[in-house]
Length: 573
Image 1 (tube, one colour):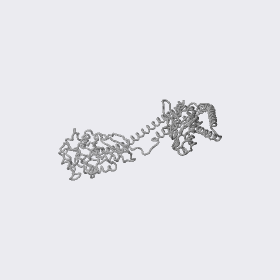
Image 2 (spheres, helix red, strand yellow; image 1 turned 45 degrees about the vertical axis):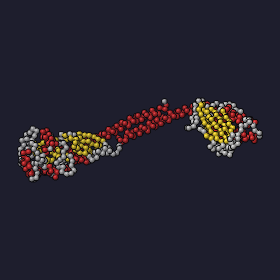
Image 3 (cartoon, one colour; image 1 turned 180 degrees about the vertical axis):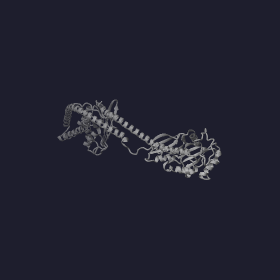
Image 4 (cartoon, rainbow, N blue to C red; image 1 turned 90 degrees about the vertical axis):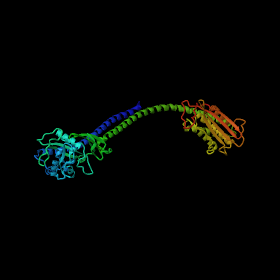
């Protein structure tokens, strides 16, 4: 349970921090969306304001036409419109004009009016057999574009005709759908639209559904009916709104809600979604029609506190959670360490007593083994020097075993390492290269001490009776570990080669009896000596007993480690 306290502290703080950061993030997102909505609203306001200004100019012109007692001539209309300074004050507005309503039978009379104002080349166009006309009689400011539109019958084109009829029927200003203005005489063209305002002489009566019973146009007589209108280039209108200071970071695409096939305007960078990401759609009313403005807003180029606050918050809470978890973990660790130290102290006292008892046992066994070797060596030695050499060599074998065990903290010793030490002591460090082979086998204390004396005796005899002194290939030692039921059996083959025939001895010497006592007595194994014509083969088989506490780990690819049985109190004599 204590291990869960630090993670719980960390998780709790991080849950709180995540909640706070999400709140800040959502606030930043709402501010981001609000900014996009605000920028889009500013653009809509600019477009709406400009259109309102243009419409106000159209109403003023209509009022002027109605107030005039006679027909307004071209020069008079030009002087009035020039005072408005349309190009400077009303960008996007191509001009202001008047289209007079008349019957097709009066084309000649209308052509006379146009010729009076604009010269003999001006006339009504195109020819049509429809029952009504609405030809452009006046249009200012006069330039090449507007001059090309003089005399054009707007009633002959369906989009314009629909808007004119609606304006005449409702008396309100009405915008047409997207069209290409007749003023577009250059290679670079823009989509356009027109806004119509109904004009009717005060004493005239409104005809139902058409322009009927109209008086013949005359250069002196005031027109009976018609429309005051304004042609707009949509591109110029929107680009002026976009370029107004301060310049808005937006890209725009606009189209008429009822005519999506013709775009009114599209910014050059509208499709660059990497630069203009946030999209806001607005619908605005324009003189009886609805425009859809798809506005893409460019994200802020710089970060402010509101943008970085969520990330700073989560970083601070992460640091805080980590610190609190670390402090909690450290405190708990200190408590566990104190408890562990107390347990170790109690355990060390217990182990100290056990070690003292074990040392007494080992010393007793070692002294008994040394005394037995001393008596037997003395019994089979002819001289004191012979006794000293033999006894010293056997003590060194025991020392090698003790050294191998000491390096492994009295747990295990490697068979190959033990064999190499004994052969190196007897034959020399460089005499046994390539002689030994077999898997890794770890031996317990009893087996190590028994094998140390056995290898010493075998190596001493090999040095005396085989050719190993002159040929380091005359001796080979190999071993293997096999499973027999539940037991693991170590089989070691010691093979000597000699040029002289080898015969079995008439009686057993001390070395032979010492080997038998170690293998058969100590390790409960077996030993088979085969004296052959060209050498000696000794096969030793001993069981490897698993420790009662469970098997010990062995090295990768090696045979399982030998187990240790209970060490006997008395050594074989």
